[in-house]
Every structure is written in structure tokens, then in C-alpha cells.
Image (tube, rainbow, N blue to C red):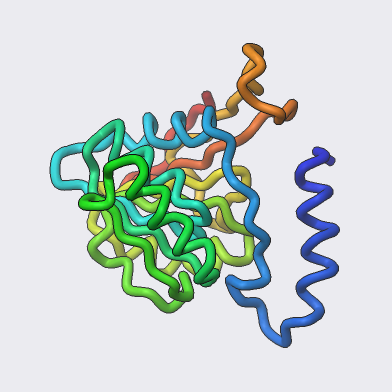
Length: 191
């Protein structure tokens, strides 16, 4: 088992017993490395008018990078009000607050129907619980999950991201992206 996954599992075993039911606040904030964020945004294949929703947005890096690089409007959803405040501050510093919105809300109850791209770096149980909302998105909408897939929903594509070799990241493990296009049959290939 990968080291990062082991850390997440141990943390989850400590945190989750405190919760009578699974909730988004039982998921620790573990930021996606920037090389993974950049690839997630590349595979999103943004088009004019797209709206990105990042579930469990943490410090806002995915929404902010999408706004900076692609001019895309994005909404970050996170239960942690402190992280939401930090994300807003980060967006202001990067000059993209006019394209970004960060909400302190439960990702399982928020309305995501306007999204055309949804990014996830959440535990598998959360992704599974969100699946009914994801499958109701407009045809052609893209869902990109970092490391955790969705049961019984075959991705359109799976992509493996090797760790960077240029010293820009402390992460030594490969990462996996699961990519779905709503209304599209899964492809028969893996990148």
C-alpha cells in the first residue's frame, strides 16, 4: 500500500469513530500536489462557459489554478470554514477572486447541477455517495477524481501520473486520475 494512502487510512481510523455517520468533515485536508492539479485541469478539456466545482476544495488550489490558467469560473465546496476563508484569501492574492467562489457547505447536500466539470480528491465512500448527483449533470460534463474511484461507474479513462523528477514535489508515489464524461460509454483504454 502506498505511504500516502496508509497515512490517510490511519487518520481516518482515528477520526471516523468520532462520527456516528460518515460526513465530509471526517475527511482530512490533504492537498493535491500541484503537478496533479495541473494534469487534472488539462484532462478537464475546458471550454468557454464551463463551470468547475471542486468538492473538498481545501486551500482552493484547484479552483484558483483553473481561474488563473483557463479563465474558468469555479466554485470550491468545503465544510471547514477556516479553509474556505484561506481559499478566499488565496484567490484574492492571485487576483482571481472575481472568478472564484468558496462555500462552507456539505458537499453531499450542495446543488452542483450547474457544474460542467467536477474535481474530487475525497475518500471513495464520499465519491460513491456523490455519484447520483454526478450522473445527473449535463451530458458531456467531466468528473475527475484523484486516487479514489467510484464503485460500479466505469471511468471513460484512467490516467497514471508519475511523480515529478525535477524536485518540485515531495511526493514520491504515482497518482491516478479517474475521468468520466457524463453520458459517454467508457473507453477501452488506460493511459
